[in-house]
Image 1 (cartoon, rainbow, N blue to C red):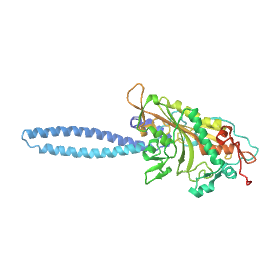
Image 2 (image 1 turned 45 degrees about the vertical axis):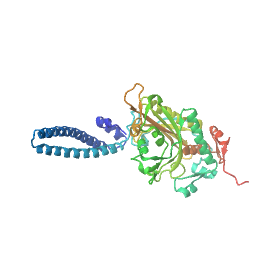
Image 3 (image 1 turned 180 degrees about the vertical axis):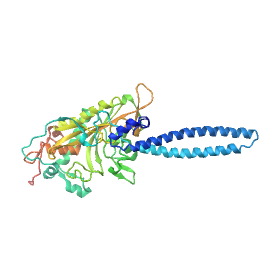
Image 4 (image 1 turned 135 degrees about the horizontal axis):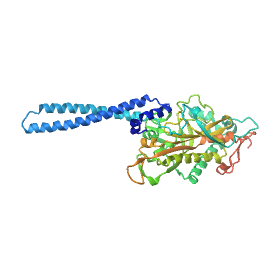
Length: 430
């Protein structure tokens, strides 16, 4: 959430920044007008209360002198009626101002490229060379079923489209990737592992920015008023909601493996084959809570931690800075890591690493007490996939496939698979 001071006092600059994010700035103008009305009414009600007090004193004085105070009593009644009218309007204005403020996206950092969509993203670097095959590489939606490790049809039979059943070495590979990522982030990168609830309250989703704007993308348990999490960012970022931390506690670093649940309401017809866009998928998340002074260095650090997974697995990828029109709602700056997928002859997103500055912390009322003392300040929050597990499995299948039909297991994963060096189709031999 943006601060009221920013909305109120820096409107012209904010109008430009929000327009660059594709936001309809007439909503900003409406907010500013209603805020001005609110402030005028506050001044009026304070003046009315002052007058009411004066008239009330006159009533007492007139009565003490034995006079008729009917005129003063009538005037106090009129003032009281106007105060009640204004206070009702102020209640409505407060609710609408708070509600509408939740719809404003975060403002982009000055280093973010301006543009309406992904075509304006800026490639920063490429790491690793895509493999050169002597054969036509297959996509994972063909490789997985041929190896007997991914069953799209039976997954759909159980839950509908965009659900998949993992079998045998596929399930084992997914589990190995989860453990490999968690071990890396906890032992080498200094994160504390967290296992959060997979169901959360609406106020928790509001804290990270999924509600109210993206409700249609969430799975809602209506009789309990709980939501399935779309990412571990949601519960982990909110772990310290409504708390005041000490500055020496920061930065906090958490990593969490969770399944993620997304309705994908706006993705009809996109990535309908395979594992790219599922209603349920696994992800290892990285979350940091920092001070404002730490957060931009923390973004580079967090991104490097996600990159390390790709580097150790020897998967070719590129780093991209998202444009103003392609960034997520809560982000001020986002790096996407895109892994090379030979079966699609393209780089595809496998991690988004974002600095949300104080945007989420203001919504979640997450603050810290400065070392030098003074009033508590809003923390800065960052998050990133470290990595999306299913997409990492895709990248391994497609990049490590062999002409004979089997898939080589990356060396770093073999200890997590009991030394298994290759995944091949099961035979009918007993």
